[in-house]
Image (cartoon, rainbow over all chains, first blue to last red; front, top):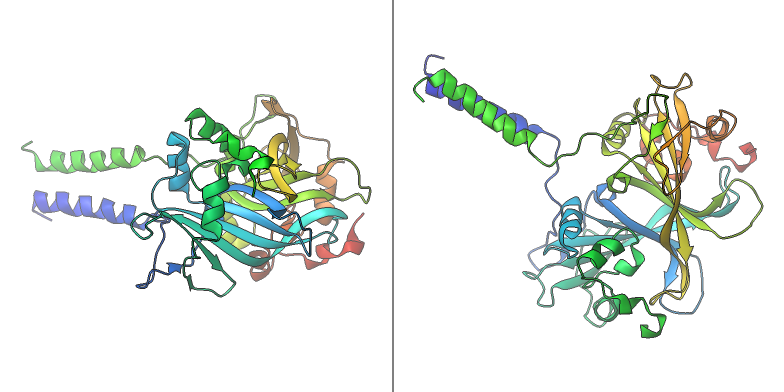
Length: 195
Length: 195
């Protein structure tokens, strides 16, 4: 290669290609069908885990089998929350439901997680939803889902979540972050405030 | 800059520096004091979550308050497991214990997670431990910890874990991976096999 400028360009392009081939995923953002249905989030098990619950319910009725709920948020949104105590636009949350089991292998009491049972998804996306926040449910084979009516999840998150529409009162590692940035509504911890 | 070769080198170095400045963390590896105590793992809450349990116990006695256990592994070790069904040398596992609460905010039944209560750590590190696997406990303020005697955690993991020393029978997303690679010991799922 006799042309040094060409040589420079080839080198830079080669380094660029090496970079592009590096195993880094693009940031996880909500993706939609043309009729505004949310596409099923992929790879959420590799996102940041916020917390897990077992059999959590806002209704005093105790009934049926208890399920675990695991909450995940993408790394980029988690990093923004760490810097501001706020969720950036395009944040996406997955609440994965898993069945629970007590007796199995060497376990004798308590509960461990087993099969996937479903998944709830929350997005903050003002370019797609006038109220910014929207809620979706996915079964095992659901590829895309319409937003639930505002009377459901939206109304409860609006009324009871401690940081914007996010139940940070149940995410022990995020609570001190939100408190530091003054975005935590401590009144939402009160049981009496519940509907 | 009249020398085209120098120009090429400067360009490549500049791109390299940009890369080096990217906000990627070094891979999480076990770190030790000079007397082979494990240093407390940092940032494990940003690792990959494997599963959570509540009040899991290998003893039939039911007693006291139930705690959640959250299991995390670094991204690099998780990626290796996805490719082979085996844990690479220098793998590190954190089992974080969190207190549980039922009544709080709008929650009325079931359990959600609250305060940090302690942390167990398992490492696979043949350069530091002749049996490869070693086990440690950390309280809230523990900065470093000695490996537990082999009669404790080691013996139980050796006898009952489904993949090497790892209780993959309790990690529902890893089970199919290990089965695919033939590294899953399904007999370890049997209750009768328990001590």
